Amino acid sequence: MVKYWLMKSELDVYPYAQLVADGKTHWDGVRNYQARNMMRDEMKVGDFILYYHSNCKPPHIAGIAKVCNEGYGDFTSWDSSSKYFDEKSTPENPRWFMVDIEPVCELENIVSLDAVRQEEALADMLLIRRGQRLSIQPVQENEFRHICNMGGVDPSIVE
Image 1 (cartoon, helix red, strand yellow):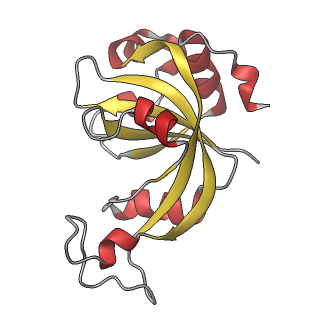
Image 2 (spheres, helix red, strand yellow):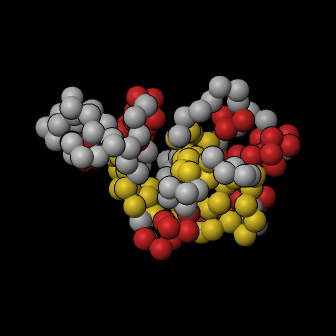
């Protein structure tokens, strides 16, 4: 069963356009246990992702991606020169995990955080809940399809 997610990246760190140019990437550097568990245990090949640009004006959903490789050890946690290094994580016993994602399509119209807040159909979306700051969040199928419509993308891309 396909699941839906929202993944946040700062626009000046790794924008959706860079994912398109690269063709795929590993989603490294997540250092929150709840987000790690989602990548390790729940995200599966073929799951769809709303690609969200945070820390910009306006914060917005820019595109659709999908999981192309399931959770595996985050090798940046083993690299002492990486800002994501964790001395307690090893290749034999990884503490942190990542997935690989690939682009599906850019939204014709970005969907801003304010636009999401104004949609009654999205009132329960985790993205707009107070205190919800996770960089990876589950999204309900109806929310995903609604965002696709708002962004000018046919939601049947997930079928």
